[in-house]
Image 1 (spheres, rainbow, N blue to C red):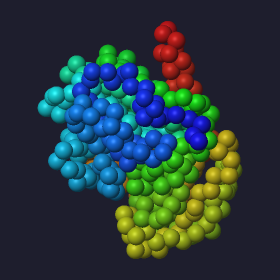
Image 2 (cartoon, one colour):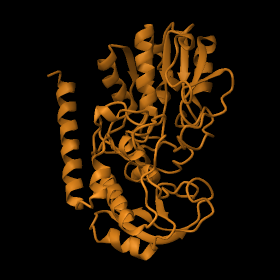
Image 3 (tube, rainbow, N blue to C red):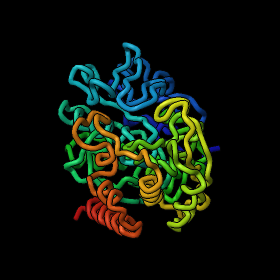
Length: 381
């Protein structure tokens, strides 16, 4: 029995007052399931019959089959794709409905594109006079916040608003922020039983991959840091069975890599040296030297600082290390690492081999600034 009821669980149990008389569109993906693993589309068809008029899919597609950046899933004609050529609902897509229901499992990281899709859906619905109804779900890595933030000059589809890389919010909390931005009609069907201190395993809910390279909660825990490797020539573990937990590159000595990371005295984490051979994506078919990241104490572990440490170590040890060039996620001019990290600052600090304490001070400062701003916004000051 789940300790937590999601917004979808509440709908499944008959809590449907928010939908009364509305013609509905549903934005969902494979992880849009209730505590009994019943998908949202089936629940909505049973509850609302002909009032469910259209379906929308985010990045990775309705079936979650699309692997990597800028790849549009093969979407059935009856489903509107919100990734690829069109990322914001058009007026034509919104015709014939009164509200878009959003039921997406986020992973608590700014660059995960579902938060951007929610932003664009909220904006489009505000313009069209449509309602947005968000079925809230847990942030699987809890409510902790870690920097860096986002410089608006670096806004992109992996970050449209100034929030920290690990933002600590649920999709419902995000939607309320966007409501203030756009003056839109947003309703959040909240959870019951969830607390920000919880990690996903504590909810009692089943984990369903929200994207092909997010197989476990452990992946989500390290992702806010290791996703930064997408902006480099090094492998972030795509093409292995532990994406984002295994990192490295050809010609990197695994033992030396692990010792370098050990020298940074990071808390709550162990780096195990290994060799791996990705089956696709970067360095497919080549032997890479690297480490597997084992988080042994989540309360002490700082994922974004770990990501910076990994970049520092690879910059020192990998003779083939390069910053990846654009395009990346529809950005054609700025460096991918810059739009991932939120500015050009991290790249420049890595290139200058700045001490890790400077990254820590920066990240903590950005996190404090965001938390203070959020408290002020929520109190109405």
